[in-house]
Length: 354
Image (spheres, rainbow, N blue to C red):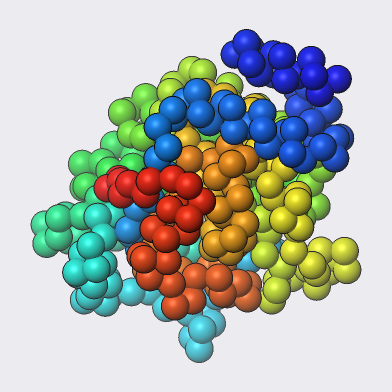
């Protein structure tokens, strides 16, 4: 059956959910990778891999959702662990990013009930009035929370954030866009429809966004495919997603792993590469597939460039959430590590700025 799927891919035909399940059911990783690479080469015929220099700034770690897969958050009232950055602290981080050649900050945080819409507007205006930097900020989950807190529709929240300086929206908080899975790992989080609704509104207001998928926990292959399908369906309608970024659940220090013996080990590189390749085959209308070198390490990320990925993601001057789960692949890395990894994989590294 893989040959029939290969024929469809070669002819540029869209794969069905059932065909996606056939791919997940196959152990022929090399053939699946070759199919994904052929799609990648059609979309990006030049031997180029892009990357960005940016910083992932978590403005607060206070969060009411208490997701079982997260080792980063602090509960409301935890004075020892919780923090919210001041403008001075935020400014220092942004200036350091600019000094290191960074062009963008990824600004995300917990769902902190003490922070209202005016906080975000004031923060964005502070950033934009003092620094020349692209503001990639606030996951759909955060925007839904702000909407509930303020009593405004998500569309109106997004418009006000855009007026304050928001440039694009990251795809965090997606996890798996299947509500029974979300109910197991993050029952207080927004629903799949709410996540997709924010992205729909953002796209229609002219903002570009990314989409992520965190896999390798309690979800099934069917759930992974359903996630890919709803992203593909929204992209058909709006065209607003610039990249799809699948990454694996990092189990250390998480409640989810503590409560499930079978989740205490990370997903294998085999599973990561297969899922990434299937992402390239199924999410056929999103331009870029991004590697997750922070969770996989540089060697697997290099291999992923022949499994459908065309973007190496960020140098990530700062990262707190994944590292809280015990992942240290990025520790001590410099830009030269990224560019050398891309070159040694046979591609030309090209910096992007947003």
